Amino acid sequence: MAFEKKEFSKPGFSKRNGFKKDFKGKKEGFKKDYSHKSFNHEDGEKKDSFEGKKRSFKPRSNDSRFNREERGFKHQDNHAAFVKRKGFSPFQLRLVNSILEDVLVMHNSLDRAYAYWFNKVKIDPVEQGFLIRQINFMFSRLSLFAFVSNLKRPSDFERHVGRLIFSYCAYKDWPLPELEGEEGFDRRGLKKRIAEANDEPLYKDGCPLWLQELGYSELKAKWDEQRVALGGEAHSYIRTNTIKGTREELAHLLSEEGVVTKPVAGVPLALEVTSNSALFRTKTFKEGRFEQQDAGSQQIGEFVGAKAGERVVDTCAGAGGKTLQLAASMEGKGVIIAMDTQSWKLEDLKKRAKRAGAFNIETRLIDSTKVIKRMNETADRVLIDAPCSGTGVIRRMPDSKWRDGREHLNELREVQADILNRYSKIAKVGGIVVYSTCSIMPSENEKQIEKFLNDNEGKFELVDDKHVLPSSGFDGFYMAKLKRLA
Image (cartoon, rainbow, N blue to C red; front, side, top):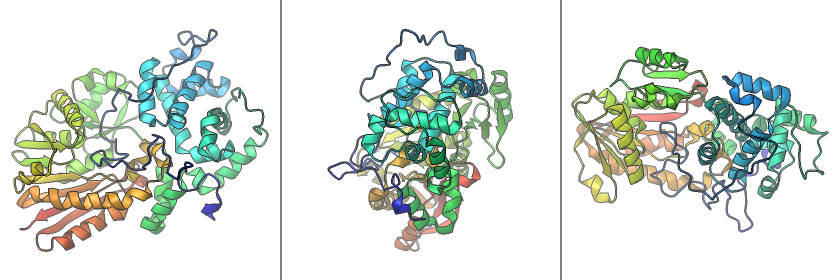
């Protein structure tokens, strides 16, 4: 197949001035502030604030959001059956359209669009979950629906958001909504174009050309399986906070609140949430008995092997999903120092730690290189959860893959190598350093470790490493355990 011939699959969206156009309106694919781990949100709570432009949800006199048949549905299956029979209600259609416009027209990220609109337009969590599932699927297959809608350029997206929803409904075989101002759109060829798109692997898997080329160049024959997995739906996992109870106790308490879960084989603290409940409104969550964290991410905390009484440093803590796991594994004994370059993330971590009952955590802001140097040779274990391309967690943020990130990968790899070289010195002689990423690309993972060991010959040795691939059903991660020898 000649990928370059596909109209929509050209690498990136190009503005007239030649810069790549991402959905946030920046001139860069990856942020230069590498303390923010690109696409990595697998182990943190989403912020409720929204920093984008003000938008208004236009009411309709004949459409009250409070008197709708679908408001009373208790399961997503009820919503699916309703929409299959009647189509999106006028209210749902306007809300979906508003969220898509927020991302495609106003260039805000999808998670921020969700935070804004679901804070502004209050609906039942079950209906909210149903709509999120549909919108996520639209973005996971954006190239497919663009092809079906005959959209080829960024300006087409901004002017024809309604076509994408229309094509999505046709793809799902749901009643088709009205299309205002789309007289030139060929509705008769929809089924044919859907069939053609489903025969094209990149459209069917929702894979942009830049990601296909990067994945194949790095993973060769292994890439196809991971591409398919990354185009799938992300599962919902939580981690048991062992400070406050066992996994079995957690499952029982959640069940009493109507949340259905099942244990995850091979990940001792993980539960998969299989119901459509309001998870973060539960008493169990407010008591700090669990954190949302992918089962693949949980394996990193287990891999670190932090023990009670040790001094552990989490050098790129962010909002602290892995920090909290390490604190729990230390049974409140010893100290874990959580570090980051963003003070607001550390403030979030403090709030989460208080709820979790993790009182052996100290936070330190990295505001100069001296902060790191002062800590050299002080820790028993060091976790370096490095900034990365986030290719392992793309299916959790399906809008992110429609930005071409290759142009900043070289710079990103240099940052990874620099962080690994400097932060690894925090470990004592005989101590352990764990380097991890949420990328599945070897150039960010095992090749970084090979380079580090060559540059530090005789000073460190590789104890073990591990890959978690998206084909496992979890998000994709890499972790390597190093021992400091000198």
